[in-house]
Image (cartoon, rainbow, N blue to C red; front, side, top):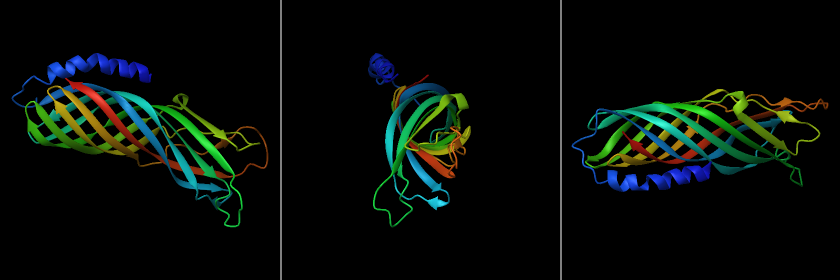
Length: 234
């Protein structure tokens, strides 16, 4: 997937040079565009417990996914509102010490969680044009993004929880808050954006092996996503 994205970016480089030389008297009142890019996803554990014991020590492994989106924008000379629809592949992993609740523990006992999710996204963002002089435009924006993740497009893997086997389902609708910077030259643009999820991204863990007694795991987490994208406005 990443190779395909890079191929498309290279194919569009001639468009950057041509479009960047075009002059426009002002931004169109309403326009739309398309963008593709990469998204690095980190996991932030907000609550972790085993049988009521609070775990305090974890490490995250930020991993890179891909996304593509259609962008709709309504402009004034200074302000704009933008929305659209996107398809995002996010993946991440983290490790947690099961002994971190015990101050007397002399060794670590880590388990890891790796997950992948494919989500449909819908942002509603408000922005300000800091520079708006044809053919250049620099803008900042912020606002919420609704994320829908179907069960069949979410997978997770737990390691070192034997003899138990756990699975989990995604929280199908999550909300993230975004903030970003956009630089436009002619009709081409580059976006840098950070998104922080507001609600927990998963539901309760479920034990499937039948082993007993089943420990009570609570594992709430959010994600932070840093993305970079290239796009064209039409």
